[in-house]
Amino acid sequence: MRDIYTFGRKPGRRNYTVKDLQDLKKTGQRLTMVNPANAGEIRACVDAGIDILTCWDSQMELCRELAPTHFVGTAMVWGQFATHDEILRHAIDCMEKGADMYYTNRSFDVVEMLARESIPVQVHMGLVPTLSHWAGGLRAFGRTADEAMKIYHEFKRYEAAGAFACEIECVAEDTLKLLNDRTSIVTVSLGSGNAGDIIFLFMSDICGESGDNPPKHAHAFRDLGRLHRQMYQERVEALQEFQAEVTARRFPYARQSVTLRDGEKEKLQEALDKL
Image (cartoon, rainbow, N blue to C red; front, top):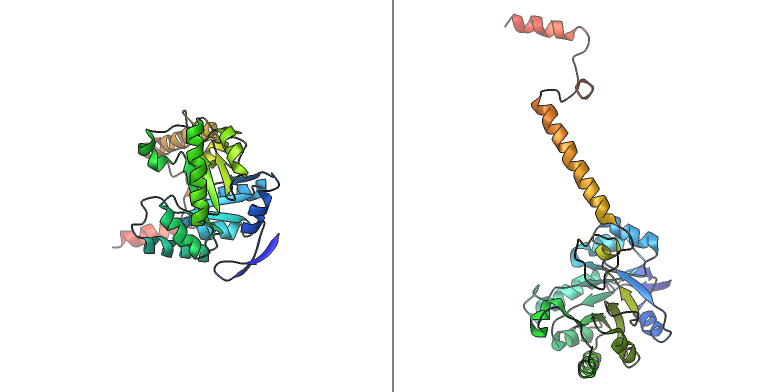
């Protein structure tokens, strides 16, 4: 555990710092990353010992409250902001609220702008779903030598722009293995095999909540989907029973109701009869 000052100039502690993650890259140690979406999921990640969390900007303060010592990244989506000034303002706000790195899939110029302000920037390579039109749809990357070399040159461009980490999505595992030692960027593998420095998987995939057609790289370690379906059915049946009992004028039941004290009903009736 490291003592730090946050980017918001508050004393704090972290399980990992940026330098720790850069240094761990040299050791081959693998870390885990998950994206909790609410208080219960954040607590579960902490209790399970997940190494790194990533959350949306709206959850940043909650995540920092419930996971005060975790390295936590946050993100912008591609179309969230139009101008560089808006992106920079948002990144600074997120860092001041306790983020440890900031994700963007915008241009190299944006990455350079953020890195110039000492913001640890995470980028995205391989399958970037938002940009899948340019790739001919959702598909794997780096399965040919030529495409693998394009990924290598993209690594170098991001290095020059100042990127600290990169999500590598749906890239051939052997390609990432060959390239990982040739870049200083901390690699976050999503669907790219056991070759990244950090292994990332969505909470819904881990817990079996991705529906009937999960992506190839997803693996359900439990089946919360079954429990959700069971809970939904129980909820519908409870509502149906409530509807039926109210319609039949049986609910509220006596035990849910309040009555006049003994003798007061007669007094009230007498007073009403005198009106």
